[in-house]
Length: 306
Image (cartoon, one colour):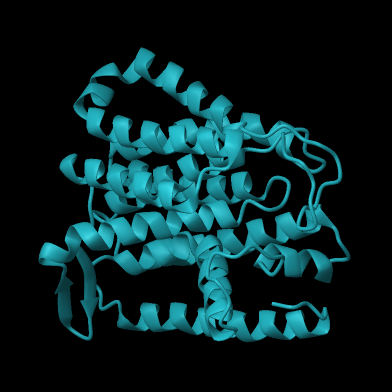
């Protein structure tokens, strides 16, 4: 059960751990139709299961952050042995950037970073699930365009499962996904993002998953500047500030962020592979700066201690 505290939006005791529901919806159905594909990628299935397992344990008794990071690192290493890792990050000012021996540590950093970002944005009814549907839809489109059955099957399966979940998670929510859901979704999206690098430039992924990434970048930057612990809990995330701006309307805030994520995702899909990625990267960095300034102003107006 999720018990309300001073950071909670809800006021009633609410069951969490719905990630168990949509994980098993996928895990039970897919083998009936794509058994050979799953056998071919058994390492990936093991990696996802380990992340799902630590998510369940966290929902049950609040697992230590170090334990979650360790499991995510081990799971990413397992992905590496399944051939899912980042070995290049694009062409900048005419210079191709290959990672070489840094491929594995960079992949671990990226996967842990985005999985944590998805966990952090799970703060309003329907938000993490809806944002995930938008992002997964982009990867389904990429898989469909390039006839990649792996990307289509896994993104499509989780989209379907999330629609079932959102019926019960839309405001007012009767159940939360919990870490069993947010960690699993973050890891799945990270995995599909890495797979998509065969078809799209790396900078496209930043736009396709912009809202969780912007939120994490800005929150971490603000905490660093204020010399506060990077992983301390507060109510200074994008969704908290926007909810106050929209008169405490959860639905309006979530719909706004869905539209914003959809716009970023469409922009990301327009960037062609092979082009110089310096300008798109600079534009994304500019977005981080502008959002930081805008949200800092909102923090001041709302008189929050962020």
